[in-house]
Length: 615
Image (cartoon, rainbow, N blue to C red):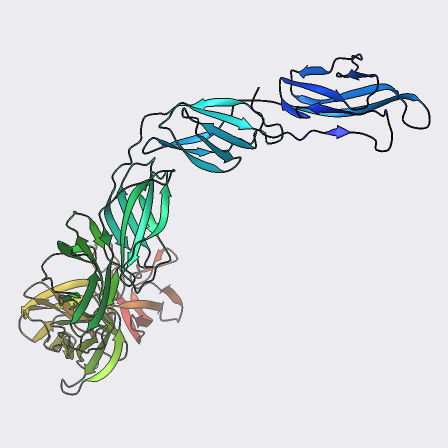
């Protein structure tokens, strides 16, 4: 039996009457299985008791319930209370509770202590008694720390109502040593949260302490519990303060290990001025070395200065974005990385002008191309002149090319210059001039054409040669003549390929660059000849009467005899009369003909005449 500390008996009676049913239970009406109790009569009558459901009456006053449950004891007897004597009964309940072994959660701590979590809801409280008979009590749902130096520890589960319960034994395990821990890295994020990386044991708890540069006193920030990440992020911090952090192992009993190394944030600020990005940073700790990261590339070629430390970056391009971070390596070889600061470089310097501009006539328009000096720009401006003296604004381009849709390169020679404005608003000087070849000429007669051109201007390496090209209507050359560095050419002879001869000049630089002039057109008239006689005798010579000529696209020939009767007609320039009429040889005679022809340019030619048919 367990020791019961307090008993409050329960008695039931009827006041104002004698010899009425009355009894109580001792030691209590609540107990633990197996529960033995005694009933004590207070009616002063002759009584019997029933202890079990459907049980028999007995005068025994002691009984034991072996299993947990709710039981009822009934007292009966011939009582005289009331108006008449009669058999009366009274019933009293007995609650018998189970006594399982306590099931508690314990955590081993340093210095041979244990943290107990009373998460077993069976009992109201748990009483711990060590070998020196020292006691500690932990209420259900709460926790406590137990000293294991006097083991074994008896754990008694206790129902407050009943003062009993099951028990078990807690034996001391191996003593726990809190591990050492070190911080390896600290990163100050752009939102000014702090990401901390540490070298610890994943099953341990670690207490984070933090101080700022104002209060300079450490306080507990949080406790890391059973984390396998080996990292922790501190949030809701003041961006205007600098912080130092250290951590230490802590157990469930509140005992702590040694502090880690101290590591502090590095706070960076920056400003962009003309041709320079200035970076400053402050750190509470005295780092052994610093490195600067610029756009992901580490730079170590800078001089450290006293607080606040600073760095000026002059290796910058206007309009480019540069992002900086500072990493401080402490004497414990831990690394603290600052927040990232991004600056857009600015400049007041006039940018270098474009060194070379290329121009060429393509599809009837002047096309300009050039090479960009810098990778970032705002806008290119194109200027045009017809006399190489006064240059007027023509248009803008965001690319390194431009097509002049305004000036006709077949009318005169146009010359061009280009400037640009960088992302800092600085405008370069105009580039050197570039002028494509301007070709013109005149037709001396049907077989002589005189070509003259103005030279190409603009290539730094100069012109190697000019090539006179004849091109078809699709721009494909079918005749080329290299004329070296001369600026004129006389084209002789009848061109039998095209009625309209399209001339252009191809220019080649000493480095192989190509430019083309405008196209100059020389018109050849369409022509045809009609014989005045033919001999259709089958000897293969002059057997047909037909036209000969060039560039005729439409043709109509009609022939009549002297009686005005039609003997032949055709619309084919290549088809002639074979001297037959309805399959029979026409007689030798004089015949009349009429011809109408149209050439490729739409010119119409009409001719009437006579012909002799000779055998």
